[in-house]
Length: 414
Image 1 (cartoon, one colour):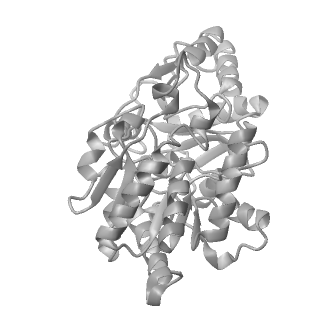
Image 2 (cartoon, rainbow, N blue to C red):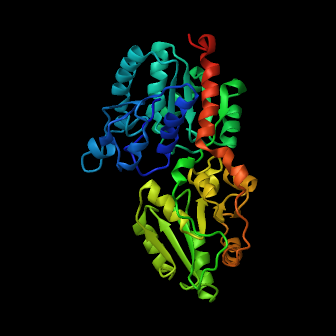
Image 3 (cartoon, rainbow, N blue to C red):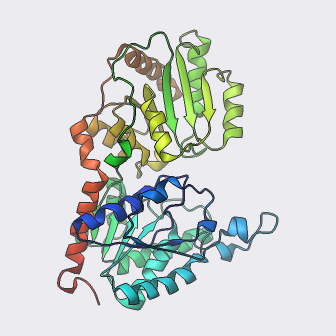
């Protein structure tokens, strides 16, 4: 399993996918060997999730530097050092270490996961050198119209993507529209070489959490509306939402005694502080520091409702946090495109009020109605039975079945 994001990396939801697969695949007859990067390559480190790595899982962390932090002079570095990404130097050490691991442990297949493109480059190289079946996991689409914006990055991404389509025994996607988009983009790509395997949640992460009663009296305290995780200034721009909150306050419809809105680990704090202050809503909207994964889940469990931002530019993606939101069983206010995969998922599971992130005019009445339904306990909750299909353990079983197909009787090995 070639994965850049693996403990002790902390600070993004991507780490959970490989970590949970490495934890649950052994239950279905597959023993993972994880090839990852040296911790120095990470911008954020944490010890909490290292304890989740099973003792019998071999983890090899090899040389890798972040070009932006380790190879720059006054913040500048040659572009070729960051193609396809800032950790391109991980490729050489990753291939050497991968070959040694393959010679020693004789694995049956190779699995690599994007969005660090160098991981797919390592997977491709190991496949070409050994002939082992290669599974290319696309947590996000590598390319879209206008992405990546930088022409050199786009060329390198397209080069890797096309070779994944050509050589990978299986391409795995996390969202239905990404799955469909790749089949349309590459008409010669057989459907039976593609697999839809969404992100999800791990039931064990929720054991021991203290959850607020679903329908309880607020006892005069304000409603607590929480957003957990990064709010990108482009793909999750909250400006229209802040404007609607400001208007509600100015018209006397909400105040700090009625609503407490917490944005946990949003990133770009200086920028958002300015937006919030300019709109006069600093008494309602608060920026809070990051927490470890476990504490962040407890923080969500102690909220009355959960907040989600997702622009139309990300219609082909479902934020990983959505599955944990759903498992918590809280009302969700989803500011996202009606046409995207996130809205489709929430329509399927229930428990969410959806309004377009860019539609300030609609946000104003929808937010007020949402808060009223949360306060009086009439907002619906996610359907627990429909949410259970997104357990990580179940997804590991699905992946194991696909690996069995690829490797039975030699599978697609060359």
